[in-house]
Amino acid sequence: MESYETVSEALTHLKSKGYTLDFNLSFNQLECPDPGLCLKPEDFEITAQFRFEGDTNPDDEDVVYVVESKDGKLKGTITSAYGLYADNLSTEMIRKLTMHK
Image (cartoon, rainbow, N blue to C red):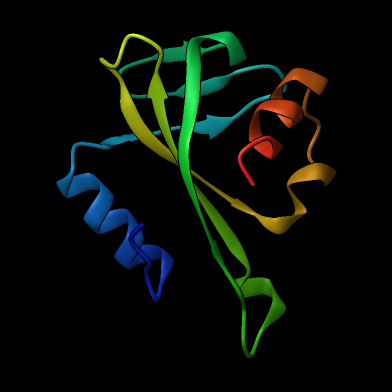
């Protein structure tokens, strides 16, 4: 499995591998404003995740999730601070994101 020093390095490399969509977490789905897509938990898989520790600043802690639609046509990433569980997410979304630790 690859490893990256920074979030930006991970995102750049993943984009070069075809993970070009930038998904956002919503209560019960992933949203991609461009091109206006939404994926429910049953429509996607987390294929990898990368954690980044904030050595000098806890605000720098982040997770990059690698996402693919079940049909393999949509590939992208989600970035989220470790405070993910403080966000207002459905049980299904939390389960989907935590099952890949």
